[in-house]
Length: 192
Ligand code: AP5
Ligand code: MG
Image (cartoon, rainbow, N blue to C red):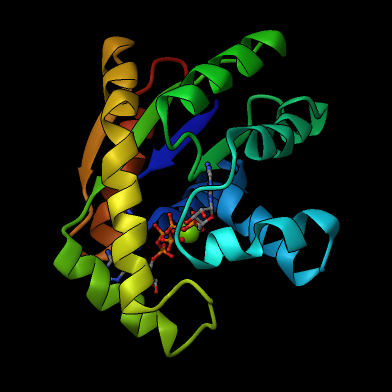
């Protein structure tokens, strides 16, 4: 089973991915975390992308595509991936489809977490006091939200057309959301 989880910044993609990983024994593939690791490790790629990420913009489709292909092509993760934060635009959605076809895999469910900008600001500012993410200021989180809104509608349509889209209210408690997601995953035919 492969799962997509998407939603605006602070929607709970990472939080719910952790839950799904444990309950359904999948592997989380967070493009944001992979990119931040490149920056932390001061790799050539990290140096190239740090100012883009810290300003709330998206890095190029090619860069993220190369990162995710490494996982999709790896037999260890075959049909065991949860895509957190990918795809973010139509180009990435079609690219993901092509890559999965190439390695004889598919998406089983695309979960969209819906959260208001007001809630996002509150959560991100709270997180800022605990973790040190360079893109967690109020100004940059608004920018990240705008980038999400600007690019996501064709992605939503893409997964609606293939009947894979499930919208989850991301405003409730972490455990209520986990329960709803659990039920949705378990309702996939032949998920075991
Ligand atoms: P990324 O790392 O994906 O960041 P994001 O999309 O902005 O989302 P966050 O990680 O901030 O939030 P989340 O939804 O994971 O929420 P979380 O569970 O942490 O991307 C960062 C950057 O990398 C992008 O801006 C871009 O530059 C680049 N990038 C990444 N992917 C890319 C791609 N595909 N293409 C191009 N560029 C890409 O929760 C947030 C906080 O809220 C936590 O403190 C949590 O404890 C709390 N919380 C969660 N759920 C609840 C709840 N229900 N109630 C109360 N609190 C909650
Ligand atoms: Mg995250």
